[in-house]
Image (spheres, rainbow, N blue to C red):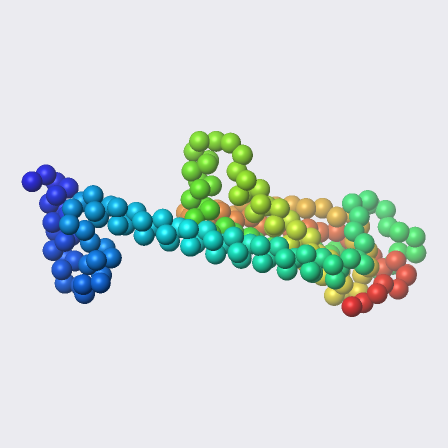
Length: 184
């Protein structure tokens, strides 16, 4: 009996103490049955996780679209000059940390090994920038400003063992133009 068969025999013996449904779920009469059963379960779990993450990402994008429409009256500019009659300049910012789920993180790590464009990471950065931009506009609205000038972005990678996240910060100078802006 080789080493793998010995390990598998010990595994089956320890599995005998569990209910029959657990044995059927995790067991198998041979080593190949064991790997086939667990591979199918892992694939099903990965598909479920990927589907849920995609659903939540789309929902977040839809929520951001609605929030952007409500903030359309807040004017944004990368120019350093304020509009005429501008008053009360103050720093306005929006910050967010956005992370991927474990399944996409696994595929990102695999893609890093072979190289190339990482589309999932591009979407993560774009979502982070968009959310930071929206939060900056919400901050401007909360403080009563109708223009944000000299807008800039900065970001950093937040890394851990199985963590693929980015922090995005959008900031600028909030000014009041002297014109009445419509409030929702």
